[in-house]
Amino acid sequence: AQSVTQPDIHITVSEGASLELRCNYSYGATPYLFWYVQSPGQGLQLLLKYFSGDTLVQGIKGFEAEFKRSQSSFNLRKPSVHWSDAAEYFCAVGAFGNEKLTFGTGTRLTIIP
Amino acid sequence: GAVVSQHPSWVICKSGTSVKIECRSLDFQATTMFWYRQFPKQSLMLMATSNEGSKATYEQGVEKDKFLINHASLTLSTLTVTSAHPEDSSFYICSATGGLGNTIYFGEGSWLTVV
Image 1 (cartoon, chains in turn blue, yellow):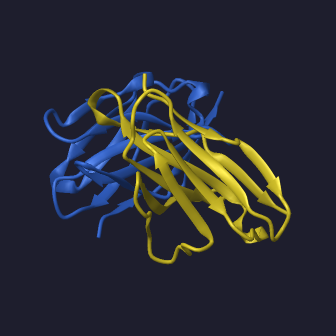
Image 2 (tube, each protein chain N blue to C red):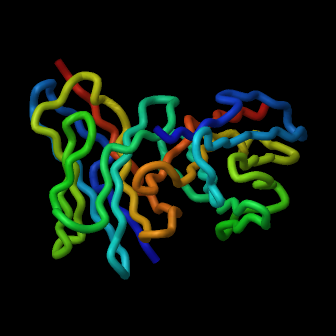
Image 3 (cartoon, helix red, strand yellow):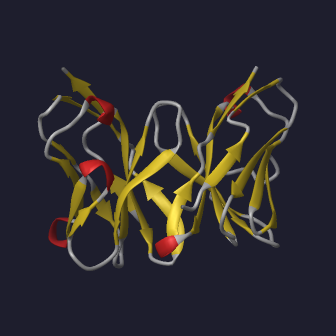
Protein backbone atom coordinates (compact mmCIF):
# COMPACT_ATOMS: atom_id res chain seq x y z
CA ALA A 1 0.00 0.00 0.00
CA GLN A 2 1.18 3.48 -0.72
CA SER A 3 1.82 5.97 2.06
CA VAL A 4 3.18 9.45 2.58
CA THR A 5 4.96 10.81 5.62
CA GLN A 6 5.38 14.47 6.37
CA PRO A 7 7.55 14.49 9.49
CA ASP A 8 7.03 18.14 10.38
CA ILE A 9 3.58 19.03 11.67
CA HIS A 10 4.35 22.71 12.04
CA ILE A 11 7.19 24.88 10.79
CA THR A 12 7.83 28.54 11.54
CA VAL A 13 10.02 30.57 9.21
CA SER A 14 10.97 34.21 9.08
CA GLU A 15 9.83 36.15 6.06
CA GLY A 16 12.61 36.16 3.46
CA ALA A 17 14.22 33.02 4.81
CA SER A 18 14.50 29.79 2.89
CA LEU A 19 12.11 26.91 3.35
CA GLU A 20 12.23 23.17 3.02
CA LEU A 21 9.27 20.92 3.74
CA ARG A 22 9.96 17.22 3.96
CA CYS A 23 8.02 14.43 2.33
CA ASN A 24 8.81 10.73 2.28
CA TYR A 25 6.76 8.22 0.39
CA SER A 26 6.30 4.48 0.19
CA TYR A 27 5.17 3.10 -3.13
CA GLY A 28 5.82 -0.14 -4.98
CA ALA A 29 6.14 1.27 -8.46
CA THR A 30 7.22 4.57 -9.96
CA PRO A 31 5.33 7.18 -7.97
CA TYR A 32 3.39 10.14 -9.23
CA LEU A 33 4.15 12.85 -6.64
CA PHE A 34 2.38 16.09 -5.84
CA TRP A 35 2.57 19.06 -3.55
CA TYR A 36 -0.63 20.96 -2.78
CA VAL A 37 -1.22 24.07 -0.70
CA GLN A 38 -4.37 24.77 1.27
CA SER A 39 -5.24 28.11 2.83
CA PRO A 40 -7.58 28.05 5.85
CA GLY A 41 -11.08 27.00 4.87
CA GLN A 42 -10.12 26.68 1.22
CA GLY A 43 -9.65 23.91 -1.30
CA LEU A 44 -6.35 22.59 -2.61
CA GLN A 45 -4.10 24.31 -5.10
CA LEU A 46 -1.51 22.31 -7.00
CA LEU A 47 2.01 23.65 -6.54
CA LEU A 48 3.85 21.09 -8.63
CA LYS A 49 3.94 17.45 -9.65
CA TYR A 50 6.47 14.85 -10.72
CA PHE A 51 6.21 11.65 -12.69
CA SER A 52 9.36 11.31 -14.74
CA GLY A 53 12.19 13.25 -16.28
CA ASP A 54 14.19 15.90 -14.53
CA THR A 55 14.15 15.17 -10.81
CA LEU A 56 14.08 18.88 -9.94
CA VAL A 57 10.60 20.16 -10.60
CA GLN A 58 9.63 23.81 -10.77
CA GLY A 59 6.20 24.86 -9.62
CA ILE A 60 4.12 27.94 -9.13
CA LYS A 61 4.79 30.73 -6.63
CA GLY A 62 8.55 30.12 -6.73
CA PHE A 63 8.39 26.62 -5.26
CA GLU A 64 10.46 23.68 -6.41
CA ALA A 65 10.78 20.07 -5.33
CA GLU A 66 13.41 17.43 -5.82
CA PHE A 67 12.64 13.76 -6.31
CA LYS A 68 15.26 11.49 -4.75
CA ARG A 69 14.46 7.87 -5.44
CA SER A 70 17.26 6.54 -3.22
CA GLN A 71 15.78 8.40 -0.24
CA SER A 72 12.12 7.98 -1.24
CA SER A 73 11.78 11.70 -0.76
CA PHE A 74 10.14 14.61 -2.55
CA ASN A 75 11.00 17.68 -0.49
CA LEU A 76 9.52 21.07 -1.28
CA ARG A 77 11.74 24.14 -1.24
CA LYS A 78 11.50 27.87 -1.66
CA PRO A 79 14.52 30.20 -1.47
CA SER A 80 12.70 33.13 0.11
CA VAL A 81 9.27 32.87 1.71
CA HIS A 82 6.63 35.57 1.72
CA TRP A 83 3.97 36.17 4.35
CA SER A 84 1.38 34.98 1.84
CA ASP A 85 2.98 31.52 1.85
CA ALA A 86 1.52 30.80 5.28
CA ALA A 87 -0.79 27.83 4.74
CA GLU A 88 -1.04 24.07 5.07
CA TYR A 89 1.07 22.04 2.66
CA PHE A 90 0.24 18.51 1.61
CA CYS A 91 2.40 16.00 -0.17
CA ALA A 92 0.56 13.27 -2.07
CA VAL A 93 1.38 10.14 -4.04
CA GLY A 94 -0.53 8.27 -6.70
CA ALA A 95 -0.07 5.98 -9.64
CA PHE A 96 0.20 7.34 -13.15
CA GLY A 97 -3.15 6.93 -14.81
CA ASN A 98 -4.93 6.56 -11.48
CA GLU A 99 -6.07 9.81 -10.01
CA LYS A 100 -6.68 8.37 -6.57
CA LEU A 101 -4.20 10.08 -4.26
CA THR A 102 -2.84 9.27 -0.84
CA PHE A 103 -2.06 12.36 1.19
CA GLY A 104 0.41 13.03 3.95
CA THR A 105 -0.78 14.54 7.19
CA GLY A 106 0.28 18.00 6.13
CA THR A 107 2.73 20.62 7.38
CA ARG A 108 1.43 23.91 8.67
CA LEU A 109 3.69 26.81 7.72
CA THR A 110 3.75 29.96 9.80
CA ILE A 111 5.62 33.04 8.62
CA ILE A 112 6.92 35.55 11.14
CA PRO A 113 8.01 39.10 10.29
CA GLY B 1 -7.79 26.43 -17.32
CA ALA B 2 -9.73 23.44 -16.06
CA VAL B 3 -11.83 24.15 -13.01
CA VAL B 4 -13.70 21.95 -10.62
CA SER B 5 -16.47 23.62 -8.69
CA GLN B 6 -18.33 22.50 -5.60
CA HIS B 7 -21.65 23.65 -4.26
CA PRO B 8 -22.52 24.59 -1.63
CA SER B 9 -19.38 25.95 -0.02
CA TRP B 10 -21.01 25.93 3.40
CA VAL B 11 -24.06 24.07 4.64
CA ILE B 12 -25.63 23.61 8.04
CA CYS B 13 -28.22 20.92 8.50
CA LYS B 14 -30.14 19.35 11.35
CA SER B 15 -29.38 15.89 12.64
CA GLY B 16 -31.33 13.25 10.79
CA THR B 17 -31.70 15.18 7.58
CA SER B 18 -29.90 14.62 4.30
CA VAL B 19 -27.68 17.05 2.46
CA LYS B 20 -26.38 16.97 -1.10
CA ILE B 21 -23.04 18.34 -2.27
CA GLU B 22 -22.33 18.84 -5.96
CA CYS B 23 -19.03 18.57 -7.77
CA ARG B 24 -18.85 19.90 -11.30
CA SER B 25 -16.09 19.93 -13.87
CA LEU B 26 -16.66 23.24 -15.61
CA ASP B 27 -14.75 22.95 -18.85
CA PHE B 28 -13.84 19.32 -19.26
CA GLN B 29 -15.48 15.92 -19.04
CA ALA B 30 -14.59 13.72 -16.11
CA THR B 31 -15.48 10.06 -16.26
CA THR B 32 -14.02 9.65 -12.80
CA MET B 33 -14.23 11.93 -9.82
CA PHE B 34 -13.02 11.36 -6.28
CA TRP B 35 -14.52 12.37 -2.96
CA TYR B 36 -12.33 13.10 0.02
CA ARG B 37 -13.09 14.02 3.60
CA GLN B 38 -10.97 16.20 5.82
CA PHE B 39 -11.46 16.63 9.55
CA PRO B 40 -10.18 19.85 11.10
CA LYS B 41 -6.41 20.02 11.13
CA GLN B 42 -6.11 16.58 9.59
CA SER B 43 -5.25 15.23 6.19
CA LEU B 44 -7.54 14.30 3.34
CA MET B 45 -8.92 10.80 3.38
CA LEU B 46 -10.31 9.26 0.22
CA MET B 47 -13.92 8.23 0.66
CA ALA B 48 -14.90 6.92 -2.74
CA THR B 49 -14.33 6.90 -6.46
CA SER B 50 -17.26 8.20 -8.46
CA ASN B 51 -17.66 6.54 -11.86
CA GLU B 52 -19.87 8.05 -14.53
CA GLY B 53 -22.75 5.76 -15.36
CA SER B 54 -21.90 3.13 -12.77
CA LYS B 55 -21.75 2.55 -9.05
CA ALA B 56 -19.20 4.31 -6.93
CA THR B 57 -16.31 2.43 -5.41
CA TYR B 58 -16.01 3.04 -1.69
CA GLU B 59 -12.90 2.87 0.45
CA GLN B 60 -12.77 0.50 3.35
CA GLY B 61 -14.69 1.77 6.33
CA VAL B 62 -16.87 4.21 4.40
CA GLU B 63 -20.60 3.51 4.70
CA LYS B 64 -21.99 3.40 1.19
CA ASP B 65 -25.57 3.68 2.42
CA LYS B 66 -24.75 6.80 4.35
CA PHE B 67 -22.66 8.55 1.72
CA LEU B 68 -24.56 8.17 -1.53
CA ILE B 69 -22.65 9.06 -4.66
CA ASN B 70 -24.23 9.64 -8.02
CA HIS B 71 -22.30 10.41 -11.20
CA ALA B 72 -25.07 10.89 -13.71
CA SER B 73 -23.16 12.92 -16.26
CA LEU B 74 -19.61 13.51 -17.38
CA THR B 75 -19.50 16.84 -15.60
CA LEU B 76 -21.39 16.24 -12.36
CA SER B 77 -20.96 14.02 -9.35
CA THR B 78 -23.03 14.39 -6.19
CA LEU B 79 -22.41 13.26 -2.65
CA THR B 80 -25.45 12.92 -0.43
CA VAL B 81 -24.93 12.54 3.29
CA THR B 82 -28.01 10.74 4.52
CA SER B 83 -29.40 10.88 8.04
CA ALA B 84 -26.64 13.23 9.00
CA HIS B 85 -25.17 13.22 12.50
CA PRO B 86 -22.87 15.74 14.17
CA GLU B 87 -19.90 13.41 13.64
CA ASP B 88 -20.44 13.80 9.90
CA SER B 89 -19.46 17.44 10.22
CA SER B 90 -16.38 17.82 8.09
CA PHE B 91 -14.83 19.38 5.00
CA TYR B 92 -15.73 17.42 1.88
CA ILE B 93 -13.69 17.94 -1.25
CA CYS B 94 -13.83 16.40 -4.70
CA SER B 95 -11.28 16.01 -7.45
CA ALA B 96 -11.35 15.29 -11.16
CA THR B 97 -8.76 14.88 -13.86
CA GLY B 98 -8.73 16.89 -17.03
CA GLY B 99 -7.30 19.77 -18.97
CA LEU B 100 -3.73 20.05 -20.14
CA GLY B 101 -1.51 17.20 -19.06
CA ASN B 102 -4.38 15.41 -17.35
CA THR B 103 -3.92 17.49 -14.25
CA ILE B 104 -5.80 16.51 -11.11
CA TYR B 105 -7.96 19.42 -10.03
CA PHE B 106 -9.64 19.81 -6.68
CA GLY B 107 -12.84 21.61 -5.94
CA GLU B 108 -13.01 24.42 -3.43
CA GLY B 109 -14.48 22.09 -0.84
CA SER B 110 -17.72 22.08 1.09
CA TRP B 111 -18.01 22.63 4.83
CA LEU B 112 -20.77 20.57 6.40
CA THR B 113 -21.93 21.29 9.92
CA VAL B 114 -24.58 19.04 11.41
CA VAL B 115 -26.35 20.48 14.45
